[in-house]
Amino acid sequence: MKLLLPSTSVAVFALAACTTPAPVPLKEGDVPPAFTAPIAKDAPVWPQIDWWTTLNAPELPPLETTAKEQNLDLLAAAARVVQAQAQTGIAGSALFPSINATGTAQRRGTDQKGVPGGNTQNTFGVSAQASYEVDLWGRVRRGFESSRAEAQASLAAFQNIMLTLEGDLAQNYFSRISWIVSIVLL
Image (cartoon, rainbow, N blue to C red; front, side):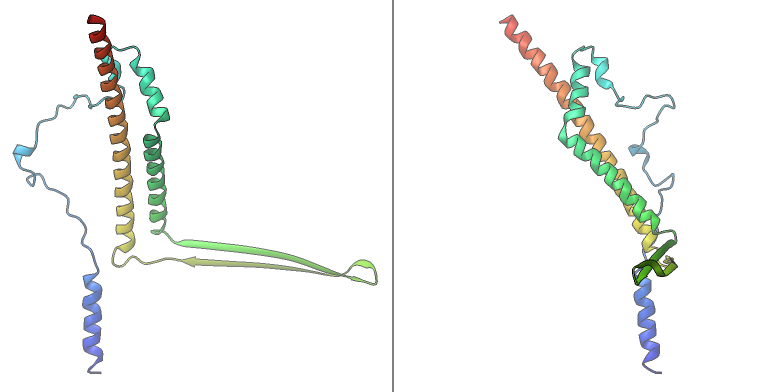
């Protein structure tokens, strides 16, 4: 009995140490005023989805479309976004009960002296299983939140790669035009 009480208290403290507190959202006064700027309600979002069309270069939009369709880095980033979204669905499924059901059917027959179907047996079976993990310490919920954050990060990475691709293509296009103009003027 003397050994049971200390070992129980050690187990309780060890389990309590495994819990992770929920992240505390920022309050209004947590961010210094020097780091914030007023945002107009009707302000356009920058960059616009097709920002290169405002550059008045008729050859640029088809080049941008081709680059986005054929750039392997962008396609790989898009695949990572789909993968991260699927992982989020898998992690979220752990929040719900798991139910499995199976059914079996079997038919056996034997011939008796050359007559088919002399002794036929049918066997049917059904089984079901349900399970649920109670999320006492928030491990499953935190795993889902982590997976959702990873999906958001992969989407941001995809958007970053796409904007970099668009910007690099526009910059190279105008550098080429500038180079051609300088050759013509020489």
